Amino acid sequence: MTSTAPRTAAARPAAPPLVLTRARLGAGGPPVSLRVDGGRITAVVPAAERPPLRTGERAVDLDGRTVLPGLRDAHVHMTQWAGTRRRTDLSAARSARQAADAVAAATAGLPPGEIFLGCNFRDGLWPDAPHRDLLDAAAPGRPVALVGADLHAVWMNSACLALIGADHPTGLLREQACMAALAALPEADEETADRWVAQAGEAAAARGVTGVTDFEYADNLANWTRRTAAAAPAVRVSASVWSQHLESAIERGLRTGDPVPGADPLVRMGPLKMITDGSLNTRTALCYDPYPGLAGQQDAHGLELVPSADLVRLMRRAAAHGIEPAVHAIGDRANAVVLDAFAEVRCRGRVEHAQLLTPADVPRFAELGVTAGVQPEHAVDDRDVADRHWAGRTGRAFPYRDLLDAGARLEFGSDAPVAPLDPWRAIAAAVHRSADDRPSWHPEQEIPVRDALTAACGGRRLVRVGDRADLAVVDTDPLTADAATLRAMPVHATLLAGRWTYGGPED
Image 1 (cartoon, rainbow, N blue to C red):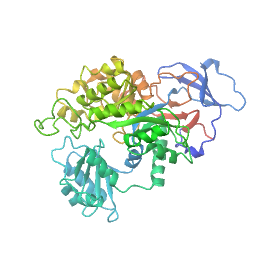
Image 2 (image 1 turned 90 degrees about the vertical axis):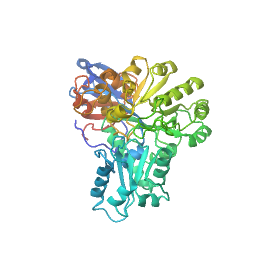
Image 3 (image 1 turned 60 degrees about the vertical axis):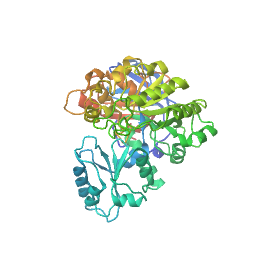
Image 4 (image 1 turned 30 degrees about the vertical axis):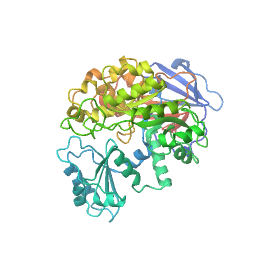
């Protein structure tokens, strides 16, 4: 058995029955053999009782590796992630000047006039402010657009602003202005973008991922129907809808979890996505306390992007037709507003991010049956920004242990491209609360490995008979892995409904 490059969906034959031998059943689990047939796990027996092969079955020796439920990234933006994988990473920039210098170096050899796209800048701690003049000097005449790490800001130069027919005094656009500017940028053609998305799905499968929820700001139902017309995706897809597409989904009779007519069976109807506030790095997350240095200014507490009455109306409309809401809330005040809306509508759903919570709101997740869709990598990426802009409140920021102890259901995501689509990074961040050599940031909020795995597997805690054969095979038992190994977990193979999407036996 060998870990090969991911296979495209078109190259995968119908899944033959398998017997996986010399496997470890879950983290810390016993040695077993597993039978996989018809896309499901049909038997789990002790290794000493390896079942005899039936006609057409193939035995695959896992050599003591650990078999886990397939991992699921519960929050991605697939098109943006696919494109970001081809953009220049500016996360190392520690000032606007450094970012501009990096743009100058990266554009030096490019053909004249070609648009330059960068990503992952974080200006929340910069000593100087982003300004279009810096980018004008760095890349004279060339359109430049740099997307912030949290996707809530874009920094453009004068040529790029002219390209999209806009004007702005500084070129740093936030929130709705950012979204409008990004939507106006020239896009890759559909064939190219779809190929990039397929490749991103294959890369996800190589990290043990068997499913994602796509929150791309687009007509996701139409896009995934088109993408899967010729080939199955490498992962299961829950395709979200935004408010502008809600009525169309209702007219089609689609409910959250339903197969999407015309798409591959791996594509399902997802939740309704809404955004109620901004982000920490842009200082637009809606908070009870003002941001340092902004007291008395307009929007000093952040932004309310959807009035509570409109939020309740949309949630009620969706829930009445079986569509679960997934509501973005980062600041503590935004989370309170969203939880109030769930209490009024009385529906199932999710709060996406839940980054800053008041102690009174923590138990409400379990009381209301609302899932906390969280991104632990943000906790370690944003710890310095949080220490500055949420000073005195970080003990209740990214409060995963508090939520877990209160009985809340946690599901992990990456928010890719805000963080890479790699659940192992999220697992390690939740367990160790650090991504470098610094001590754990608020270690009281660390959670156990088993709970982190469950949150990264879409709530699946065990590999059981009757389950879909969505499985990840890893070289190291997560319970014994140190922090670095857990974060970079070596994935040996991935199965989706019993088919190899990564690794697998040699043909």
